[in-house]
Length: 120
View 1: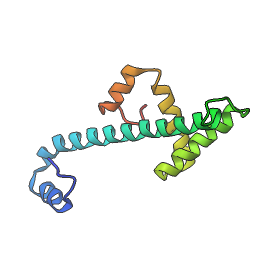
View 2 (view 1 turned 30 degrees about the horizontal axis):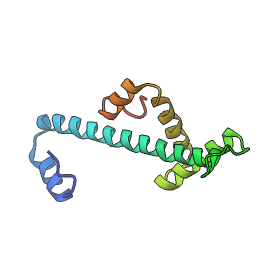
View 3 (view 1 turned 135 degrees about the vertical axis):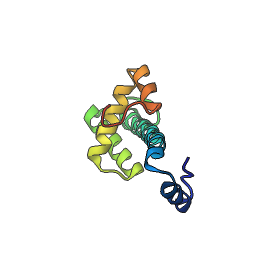
View 4 (view 1 turned 60 degrees about the horizontal axis):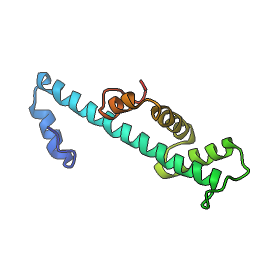
């Protein structure tokens, strides 16, 4: 298995293992990649949700007189700044994270690496 901390060791492993043995390593690496992206997306959603609630309700918990779209734009902007991704991707991740909150079984499968973000 790869170390993910020593690029030279991982390169040597790739060179020493035959093509037939790399399939299992590639599947494991792909699953780990999907798991990491799922966690990043859901963390981004929670960052955005916190900013959304802060903008909509304020620190004192009283509802402010602003529209939901303004609060959503604040959430997307906060995700974009925190993760250093563009606002389009931040908006997609925020929307997907919100949708996943309604479907816990699908969310668990996504966190397990069974689905890619593109497929979600």
